[in-house]
Amino acid sequence: MLLHPNKNWHWLFDSKIQRMTLLLGEQMQFVSELEGRKMSPAAAQAGEFTCEQTQHYLYLLEVLEGVDWPDPVKVQTALNALTLKYYHKPMMPQSWFFAQGSEMQPCQFGEMIQLQTQKSLAWFMVLEAEPTSALCMCLEKELWLSGAKSMNQFDVIKVMRDRIIEPVSVKQYARAV
Picture 1 (spheres, rainbow, N blue to C red):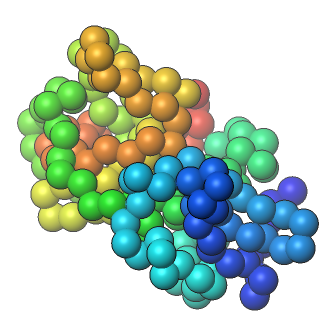
Picture 2 (picture 1 turned 120 degrees about the vertical axis):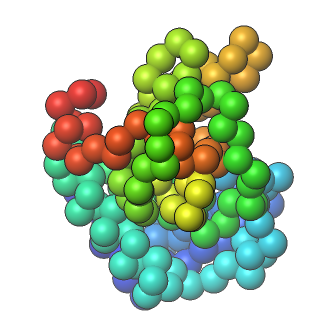
């Protein structure tokens, strides 16, 4: 079952668990993977789920429609992507973990991309596309970037766009996973 936004959806920082949450109604709450120490100051003013966020959420659900995941996983992915897009602290690129490509690749919000580490090819979703860089959310359960650094699913990293291996369609992503 896919969740559809309504006027009762409301962002809230839960100080007990140090996580950004989204109240979905009287008895439902989404707890994001975004920890308090990684939140931007905008998280303190978070409130209603805005029209823009609703549009982005519905767009992400549409993008994920072609992926063979259970509906709750699609909702979790879309809501974590939104939480990170709107409330994660700004980051500097950390491109050195990924192989450089031949040119700057175009990309846009919600697009599935691949980045090449020393050991593997990994899947990410673009959350913000800037002229030379992109903020990306890891879709892998776990990804080792180096001997001491790893990423978990829904962690974010900013990379220069010359690190992106051609953006792929959701159909291509669905066939690969």
